Image (tube, rainbow, N blue to C red):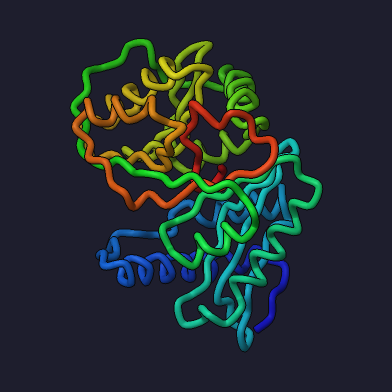
Length: 281
């Protein structure tokens, strides 16, 4: 087993490893893998992070074949782990441990750290051992029944300064052009003027941040309205995001306990009202 820097040509193999790892996790935990799951947008994300954060991009290779990868990012002094996967047939080989060590080292000197974890017990154990504070999370799933929310509108390039201000308020660091990357890979940009913003992919809430809980709840209702009856997913609802529970239940979504966990350390702001992005933290 060898761990080396990630290269652009590794993108497909890394995401093949990701799909295999998450399908295996579902089976191990008694679930059913999603047959429609794809690596959509994966190569775009890898290409971006190889430009912006090459020091956080690593792969594990066995006999010349990529069997896992890690992506870590730094934004205004805050480090985040975007991806850590190892193909099922290469797990328990030390590959995950070595990949995490390289990705974590990229955050040396960071004033804050963020990891969004799946419900994989091994992943939870590994991140807990980093000494981060653990916040168990719920997910909400269902077809929302919500009337139009006129205060929430489509965002434009003129709204990017709002995203930066809100991000610095809730997590201590702006996403910057990561917002544009999410839009380029298919997310819709929604804005509650002067109060907050959200990104929705399909009907899944991918990111939501606001200056106050009332604004965050209005934005979440706006996301549900934009779903137009399609099945929606809201992830990483921790105890700090109580504001999100009411809108989810009012819309008819079901709360589920398989939401994984949010791990944070250092200066990441109040981290609320905030629903972080699995890819961009």
